[in-house]
Amino acid sequence: MVEVTPPHSDRAPRRQTPVIIVGGGLAGLACAHRFAEAGVEFLLVEASDELGGRVRTDEQDGFLLDRGFQVFLSAYPEAGRRLDLEALDLRRFKPGALVFTKGRRHRLMDVFRAPRHALSTALQPIGSVRDKLRVGKLRWEMLRKPVEAIEAGEDLTTAEYLRKRGFSEAMIDRFFRPFYGGIFLERDLRTSSRMFEFTFKMFARGFASIPEKGMQEIPRQLAARLPAGSCRLNTPVRAVQQTGVTLADGERLAAESVVVATDAGAAGELLPGGPEEERAWRSVAGLYFSAPRSPLNEAIIALNGDDGGLVNNVCALSDVAPGYAPEGRALISVSVPGLPDFPDLAERVRAELRSWFGGEVDQWSHLRTDRIRRALPEQSPALSPAESAGYRVHDGVFVCGDHCTSASIEGALVSGRRAAEAVLETRKGNSSGRPA
Ligand SMILES: Cc1cc2nc3c(=O)[nH]c(=O)nc-3n(C[C@H](O)[C@H](O)[C@H](O)COP(=O)(O)OP(=O)(O)OC[C@H]3O[C@@H](n4cnc5c(N)ncnc54)[C@H](O)[C@@H]3O)c2cc1C
Image (cartoon, rainbow, N blue to C red; front, side):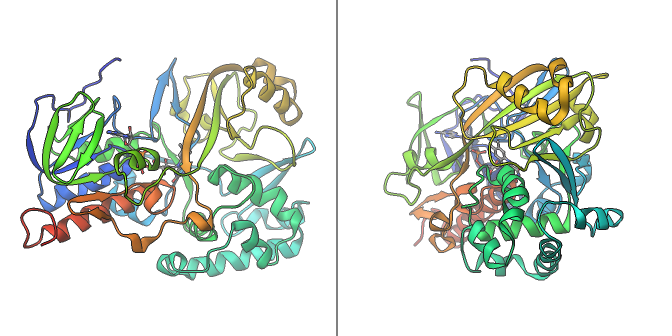
C-alpha cells in the first residue's frame, strides 16, 4: 500500500492520551475539531491512507473525481459554523433540474430562485399545476419550520409523506423519485420523511454546490486546523476497550476515553454489545466520462423521469466547477443506484444515454466506475437513529458518525461535535473521562 503522510501524520508511537478518536471521516474530524477548540489533547487514528472517509477526491489525467457523486448544501447549519465556506470556493448548481422522460427534456426550476421560469415550470408535463403549488406551500412551511421540530416530527416514509400532502403519483414518479433518489440513493422513497423535510429545507435556504477543487476540500479544511501530530494514518483499530484501543498490528494505545467515529458497519464490529449493529446499506455506482463538450452546457442536474433504466442522474461537473476537468474537456458524472453487476456497465449506460443526448455519447471515453457498497446507512423510519440513545456506549466509550444522526455531510459533522461534547461533559470534574 502506498503510504501518504500528510502534515498531521505522526508516526511516533504514543502510549497515553486523554482521548482516542477511531476514524477520520467528517464525524471524526468534527469531533477532533471540538476537542482542539476545548484544548483537550486527542489522537485520531484512521485506517486508510487519507482523511475524509467517504468524502474523497482523486486526481486522474487532470480530472477531479469524487468517490461517488456528492453535493454540499450551502445552507447546512453545522457546516456553516465549522467550515470557512468562502475558502471552499463553492460552485453552485442551478436551483432545479432537467427531467428526461421518453427521450424528451423538461425543465423544472425552483421558481422562487428562477422566477423567469415560473410559467414554463408550471406548464411542464411533470406533475400538475396543483403539484407545483403544493411544492410552493411545502417550501414556505419548511423555511419556517425549525430543524428541531423536523427532528422531533412525525416519521413516515418519504413516499407516504408526499402522498399525505396530496402530491400526484405522476409528480412523485417523475420528479421526487429521481431527484431525491439521487440524494437518498434509493428510488422507492422509503427514507424517513424527517430526512426529506430537512433536505428540502436546505434546498430552499441555499444551493447544491461543489468546491472548485473537489469534495475532499471539505475534510482537508477541517484537518488543516488540527494540531500537528494529532492524526495517524494507515492505522486500523482492531478492538476498542474502555481504557484504549488495540491496533491491527497488536500495538495498544491507552486512553481515558475512546470515540468510535467509523461507519456503522465498522462500529458494529468494534463495539460488540453497543447500539450500532451492522445495518442495511444503500449502494451506488458512480461513472465518469471524459467528453469533448458538455451535453448540458449548464450547471444543472439531469434526471431520469421514466420508470425503467439504470441511470438515475447525470451532470457535467465541469459546467459547475471548471476545475474538475482539464482545458478543452468536459467531465460527465452518472449515478446508477444499487450495485448493478454488469461487466459492461459503462457501455450499457452510454447506450441508455443515447436517448437523452443522441450520438455525441459515442465520443465520450469512460474514465472510471466507483462501485460503492457502503455509501449511506439505511434511513427508513424504522431505522431512524434514536437521538435518545446518546453518544456514550458505555463508560469511557463513545460513538458518532452519520448513522447516529442523518446520512449526510451535515449529519456526520453534527454527530462528531455532539460526541465530543458528551466526552467533555463526563470529563468535567472527573479526570478519568468516565462517569463518577
Ligand atoms: C456516493 C455517496 C454520495 C453521497 N452524497 C451526499 C450528498 O450529496 N450530500 C451529503 O451531505 N452527503 C452525501 N453522502 C453522505 C456523506 O458523505 C456521509 O454521510 C459522511 O461523509 C459520513 O461521514 P462519517 O465520518 O460518519 O463516516 P465515514 O466517512 O465513513 O468515515 C469513517 C472513517 O472511519 C475509518 N475507519 C473505519 N474502520 C476503522 C478502523 N477499524 N480503524 C480506524 N479507522 C477506521 C474509515 O476509513 C473512514 O475514514 C454521500 C455518500 C456517498 C458515499
